[in-house]
Picture 1: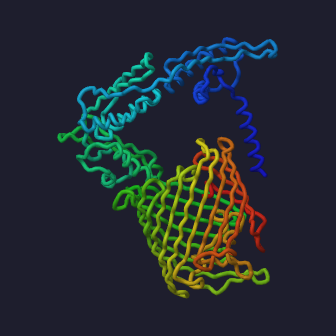
Picture 2: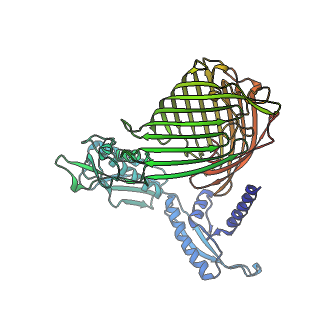
Picture 3: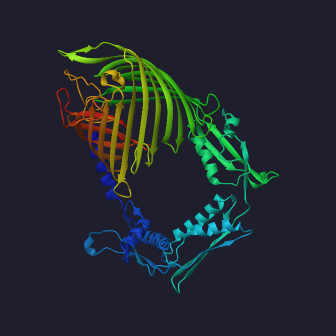
Length: 598
C-alpha cells in the first residue's frame, strides 16, 4: 500500500511539474513538423510566463538566436528569423504579452564537395587517403553544421588511429554558396610527426607493483602509436575495481628518446584499503536475509581483492573467503580461489558442509567471460517430509562431491542492472563425481538467455524475455544429492510460488527437486517518471524427474510491480500470484530487491 501511495504522489508531482513548464517563445511559419519541433526544442521552456512586454521582448530575441542555431544545424542558411511580441486581446482578462519567433526557413542547403588541406608536412599517402575517406560527407546530403563538425572529428580520429598522435585541426573553411544553395567545407589539418610508443613510466602508483603494471601494456616498444592501446590499458586497470582513478597519457614531444619513441605515463590512485558492505532483502517465499561483506584491496600489489562474506538468512547461512588475482599470467584473465562453510534449511532438504573452489576466468568487455574451474564439496544432507503436520528429516547422506566447471557468458545488453536493449546468453556444464553414501558420475548442464527490446527511442517501454533450461545426464534422481538437483520457484525464477515450490512434490507437499528444469519469463517494463516505473510480468517453469519436464510439472505465475531508479539501478517491489495454485501454496508472494528480475 505504501508503494502504491508513493507512486501516486510521484505521478501527481510529475504531472504538476509538466504543466508548469511552457515554451519560452512560440515558433510560427515552419510547415515541416520535424523542423518545427527541432526549433522548438532549441528554444526551450520557461518555468513561468513573461509578466511585462519588456520581458516578452527579451525572451523573443533570445529565442530567435536559438532558432538560428537550430536552422543552421539542420542545413538551412537562407533563413529569415524575426522576434516579436503578441499582446493579448482585451477579452483575455489581463493575460500578459507572449514571445513569438516568426521563421522563414528558406531552402535547405546541400553538400557539393569537401576536401582536406594539410598544414605543414603531409602524412603518408595511405594515411592521407584514409583521412579523406573518413570525412564521409555524401554529395547532395543536407549540409548540416553538425555533420561538418562530425566529419572533422572523424578525420582527426583517423590520423590519430594511424600513429599521428599530435594531429590537430586548424580553422576550417566552409563556403556557404547562396547562388546554388550548397555547402563546401575544406578541413585544414596539421598531421604532425608519426609517433612510435616506448614503455611505461610512472607517476603515482601507491601500493601497486610497477613490474606488474608493465606487463599489462597491450603494445610492444617501438610500435606505432594507437589510441586504442592507451584506452585498453586504462580499461584493464579500471576493471580490477581497486583504484579510485586511473590516468594513462602519452608524454609530450620533449620526452622523445634517441630512437624517436615516446613513453607513456601511468598513474593510479588506490581506493581505501578496506571496505565493509551490508545489504538486506526480503520476500514472502524466502524470508529475510542479511549479507555482510568485508573486502581488502591490493594487498599483494597486483590489484588483488580479498573478500570475506557472511550471509544470514532464514534459508541459508554461509561464511566464505575468496581471493581474486586479476590479469593472472596474462591480461583479462582472473584466478579466483575460495573456501567456505554453509548451512541450508529449505523445505526440500537440510544440508551442512564445507566447500573449496578455484576458477580461471577469461573476460572481455565488462560482463562477458569464459570460466574453467574445479570444486570440492563435503556435505551432510537429508531430505525432508511432513507427517501429520510435523517435519521429519530423512536419513542423512554424507557425500564428497568433486566437479569440473566450464562456463561462458555473452552480454550484449546496454546495462547490467537495468537493460533496455540487447541480449544475454550464458551456459555452464559441470562433470561431477560423488563418493560416500552415494557414488555416481553425471553431467549437470544449464543454459539461460534473455532479450530486451525498446519500443521507443527514450526506452520508456521495454519488452523483456528470459528462457532457462537445464538437465542432469548420466544418473538417476536417487543418485544426485538433494542440494545439487534442480529447483524452481521464487524471486529469481517463477514468481508467485514459494522457494523451490514448482515441480514434483512428495506426498506431504515437500519439494522433491528434479533432473531437469525449463523456465520462461516475459515482462513489460514502463517508465512513468524520471525515477518511477511499473512492470507487468508472467513467469512459467517446470521441474521434471526425467531429462525434460512434462506438462503436469509446469506452473505459471503472474503479477505486477513498481521500480524506483536509484541512479545506478532500480529497486524493485513485485507482487505475484500463482495461477496453478496447489495445496500449500500461498495466495501471493512479495519480492523486494535491487535490479531488474533478469
